[in-house]
Image 1: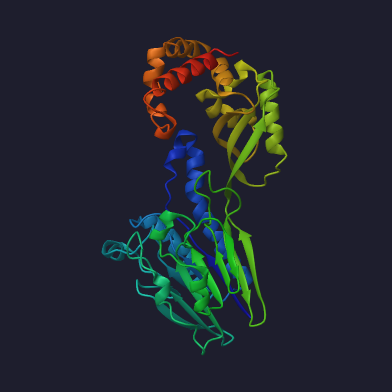
Image 2: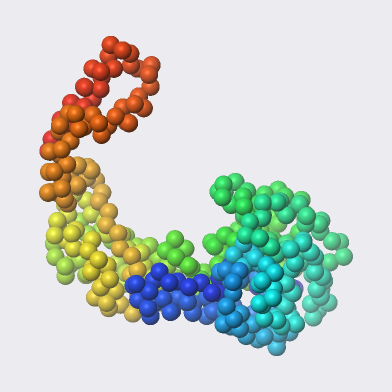
Length: 403
């Protein structure tokens, strides 16, 4: 049996500078989190006695890597070297190779093989004499428009296992992803490889079972849209069967949470509802929450104004006093209520000023001229165009005054 770890998108030197306004302590926790996650991956490699580790690109967040980030990364590689565990890595669109980066990079331990910009196959033999071929390439620019997948050779017949190591995007998912070595599942299958170790997409996912094609995801969520557990994949492979298991390693996770405050009448009830909703999740690690407070038309005006103040957002974590919980963003959302009702109730003075101004027919016509101009000409002619416009204006003004 061959056993290995597939990880990607370490982004070790991510600054997380935007969170310093929320909490400097939290920002520092996040800066350390990718290193802690990497250390857990190395711990896993040692405890599972894996044969090798694959790192599928974006080891760092930028091509200009500081020496501290390099040193911490090398420390973990040396732990693997001491256990005679090989590491095969490629560079991605964030940490792509440049002449400057090559000059300023610290030397890596002898157990590490870094792929060049050309598609290259490295043959490696396990302690049990099983032959493994690993094919990949590193980015040498921020964008790779070429279909590098076409340069990958067919599976070798003189090996027990062949792996494709690729930092790229599945074609057709998003137009912008065509900048990152695009490929299709059909193209991967034509190579007849036994496993594809992908990087670039930050959500761990399986794209195919025959052959196994996986994104490992990143090892630490970087912002509120990267919710849930992050980590690596532990792969056990034999000619007859394969097992791919996701192992969470991120010390902090991002989560989105929605709390209904429709019937809340005071601040005590508000905090109690939020605290209960978070406690029900039974989080066992540091969690960064993007909180949405939802209400219908039965909301309390004073509560709604209160939750939209900067002071509420910045003090919420402290007032909740829940261990390992950080509320980093708060949004308010109204449901089942018309735009007019919500605006009029939330901003009565401003609404009255707008109504007074827009009920002047000339002003309203000027404001809506661009909209009315979009009406297809086939519905209008010289005799009815003016009348149609005037009728639309009168109906709209009438609707503004509806209660």
